[in-house]
Image (cartoon, rainbow, N blue to C red; front, top):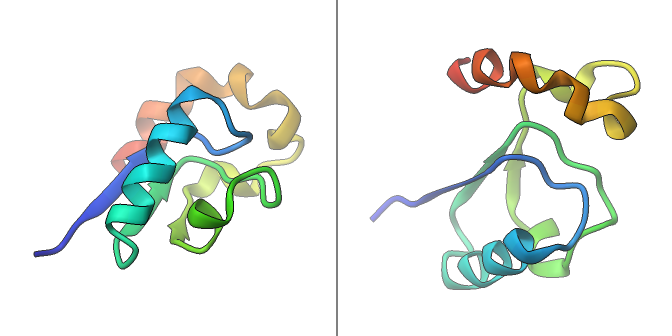
Length: 79
């Protein structure tokens, strides 16, 4: 069975990321899709996944201002 995990953004360990961590442990071979990923701020279980980001990851200042980009998130998800 193929499994894909999806999370809006991965910038730190909060409640949603703690739930995602459990899913990553249950499905270690799954791909993890997210709009952006800030390395080093997550658990080892999440960081060890095959993380695939969107074009938003490449935008300047995205790690600090990603919430200002909410209007373009739907477009990034569709790609």
